[in-house]
Length: 253
Ligand SMILES: [Mg+2]
Image (cartoon, rainbow, N blue to C red; front, top):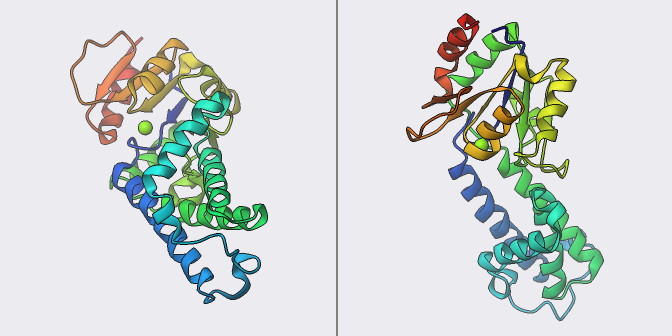
């Protein structure tokens, strides 16, 4: 077959995401708690957008521990089904609401939610791609058109790897997270190709492998087990095995 384009999932496909998410989740929340505390104690001057209100008593993370923040996000996602894949929106909104519940007036709550999200996004981008990925994308980019399609909130353009992806689709923010076909179709349209000439690479069985296959794309599934595979889905242990699969696909008629 003639391949023209390859689309990539990001998290747990090009890097191991578990540790990064954990550090990001705890790190930005602890930062917010600490910064609010310093502001309340008068050590941060005007950065909080005025003086702290008297009714914001006690430390923020004692009133609202991380578990409360997580539970609040889940509630928001259930209340706003269209936004359920837009994790950045859910986080920002949940932070703002908790800060208001803590006692901050809306303007100050918005200020601190924005600051915490900036911290979140900085930590979120401290991902370490698997060591083979840079050379792999460099080589593939010379032969194929490449796109990234993520349900997560890493903006690939903020990473050095971003230079390999002329097209980057943030499916959650499109309000159409994978397995919805729209992010795949948007990527292929922008790459100027069709599903039958494209391969999608990802670690999620439903969101990546099955979703791509339903559209008629080939799918490379980076998965742990040896479940029976429908035609057109190819299992890899690791993204580093991709070149061998592509050579094999190119030989198929
Ligand atoms: Mg993934």
